[in-house]
Image 1: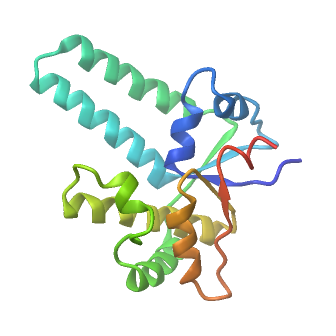
Image 2 (image 1 turned 120 degrees about the horizontal axis):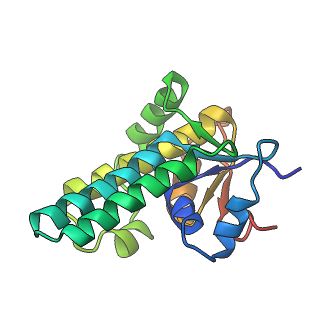
Amino acid sequence: MALPMLTDTSALAEMMKPGSPAAAWAAARTVQEPCYVSSISVFEVIFGFQQALLRALRQQAPEDAAAWSRRGEQFAQFVRRDSFVICPWDGDAALVAAHLYARLPSPPQAGWHRTRSRGKTKTEIRRSWLLDVMIASIAVAHGLPLLTRNTIDFAALSDVLPEQWRLDVRAFPEQALR
């Protein structure tokens, strides 16, 4: 039996690419060996689809709007399968997140700013970082390793956690596909 792991938004995005090894891994998940996804990652993906849909409508591009709407529906069906467990944001996760965000209120300079902040405002950067903190806190609260392509930032969060909380950060897709 495979070790249960919480997939973050970057891992979830890889799973949605048709024909990718990550998509094959996700398709192999069963009720006995499910894929755990945070409610925050579901929010991030749907929010992104909604932003693209609204942008297409503003640009009067009905074909693009319809395509984004379809992608959103496909994603909703994808994560509603019995082989997916959506882990909620709850009180335990909120306690962990408060601890993390108080100690690291903005992303570490090492990787995040170079790779994810291009063209974003400071507010957008802080919002994205807060969502990462929330995802990490769900992993800790549920006792699940976090499967991500963004190991640098999540490792920085792990470094500020007290010993009783542990964030086990794993690289995606390598560790998931073994």
